Length: 429
Image (cartoon, rainbow, N blue to C red; front, side, top):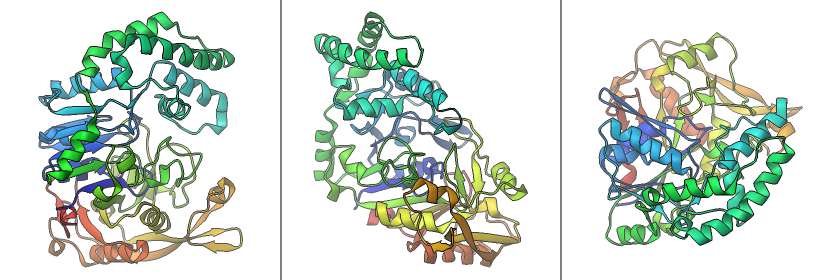
């Protein structure tokens, strides 16, 4: 049996939560490997809705959850999320959740810097969540981050805070913002330390043992390929690598152990925040997609921008992220539309382009070239087999497969966990 890595193939919010929840029922361990609490997954299980940001989705299914070293962790946000999940009847004791001891922490100065920078950018703001994820990754790269293991060494913690606060207080003062007192930050961290350290361990050892014993591991990505800090629509991206290769680096396991890479894509396209969106619809159809699809960010609460399916972007994601199969979600949102469109290329100036260039100017001026397809009158909602789908819906899915050069191996037709058409089991490789 293969392991599986699940990543977004668009700009995030593709319905990864449901797919990961569905796959987690057949996995032994679920691992978050990048991002922070700027990501959100919504799980609908019976009459309960769970909203997760840091915790691996498999916890809801009673699986062992691991937060890998590639994640940046706000300790207060993590403990609040654990408390919220436990209030819904899902226990999260240390035996069920393990955290990489070498994961970097998000501290109070990080969101302060994040928000100050966004305010200073004005009309050129990137649209971050303001939760400090970018500044925390900066500290990690600059080798001044405070990591989970540092919480066990008060003297180390105190020394590292000196350097950290010299840097951040200088920046905050430059923005005209309040600075932070070391004593208050240190006291807060020492108070949280015992609760966080109860979950900490070298998770790479546990994952190595699990791999050797043949246990199924599900790697759960946050955000999506087009928000990857290298391969996305830079600078309107997140601060981490979101491609499947990060599953290895962000959890401490060899790349050969990642297994099958499953990309998640909506049957249309959405984006939260600023940045290029060639197939965006600002008309009544865009509004309808947002209303039907309940397109509001789990973390931000912002209304998502909606548009037609962009095969150019998804094909690019398939190539750079090594996606071997697609899980196509929210097909039911398109029910009843007489005509559907798929973006098959861009017009940039006088040229036709079949990929999205890296230059921001070219990205901003890319205009979609569409292919039209016939819609369907019947309903796809709740379908659990190909036979339940209208013929035009099947044609739409098949055309997407051709254009993105990857098979649709799983099809989701409602938020309900069991309303899923499985074509090929990702765990079978």
